[in-house]
Image 1 (cartoon, rainbow, N blue to C red):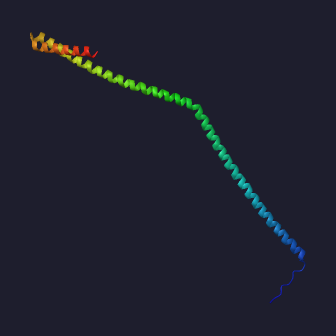
Image 2 (image 1 turned 180 degrees about the horizontal axis):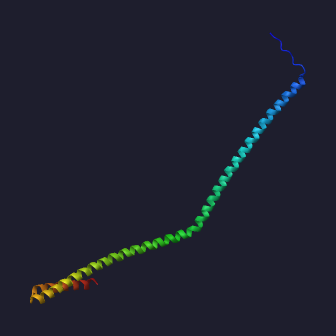
Image 3 (image 1 turned 60 degrees about the horizontal axis):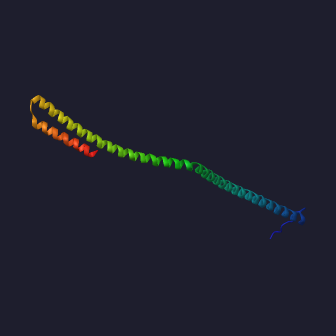
Length: 149
């Protein structure tokens, strides 16, 4: 076995100081690492808090906007209900008008038939059967209208 030669000029006190300095540097590195970790965690916590605050603020703003718009929504809903009711009434009125128009068309047809019978009677001198039928149809139509009204 070979013997290790002692290093001249290094005393045990110097070696002890070196170890202490080395331990001190390690402690400083660990301390800096921990400080950085604490700062990062604090920053993340603040960011989360800010996000939550922003979310809460956003929710609060949304609630206030809804509170202010709610009367307008109710007003619009009331107007829509009124408009729907009016449209339903208009549909009923249109059906009634269409029925009246059909009745008027029937009356115009009966009147046109009667007028045609009169003209045929004048032109052909004495088409009494056609005149009688036209008069009966006109009376039926007139009696029907009087009963409907």
